[in-house]
Amino acid sequence: MKLLSVLALFFSFQVFAYSKDGVVVHILPDELTLSSSCVAKADLQSKEFSIIYACKDSKNTMYFYNFRLNNVDLVADFKDISTDLVVNKSQFKSYTLYELTAKNSDEKPIKFVSYCTKEVCLDLVSDDEYEKSIQDSITSQLRGNID
Image (cartoon, rainbow, N blue to C red; front, top):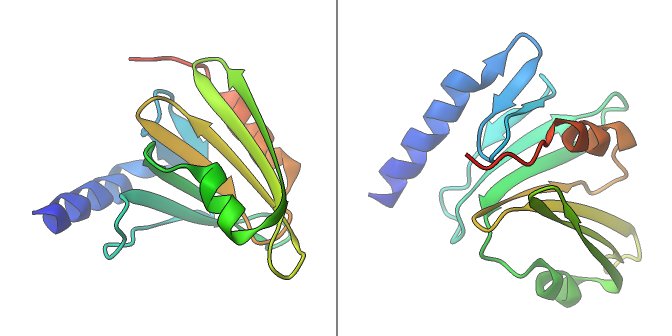
């Protein structure tokens, strides 16, 4: 049953998400328009439910939007896999904003941004440095509406 539910949800995102300006996502309380380079992916084997949009910026750097339930302690997860962890937590409208910077086992910097409500989170992550305009685009679209 879980598999059928995930497939139905994934299909509905793919069918209704595309617009002329990019990919429209209605997971958070606000509507987001993502780059048209984004492709939705779902990991049906994962223990945690999430929908990931894999995208490329103008420099062809891969970055990911991960829409997930707010039931994971990201700070604890990052402490297990990284060093020099710095966490900035702030309130942004109706969202809690987490900005994490760390170094992976290869001493390569990692930047991770997460916008969370009580129920869901949007994580913006990349293995490399993504363009600042990507995070700015999210910030400008979030109005903090709770429907």
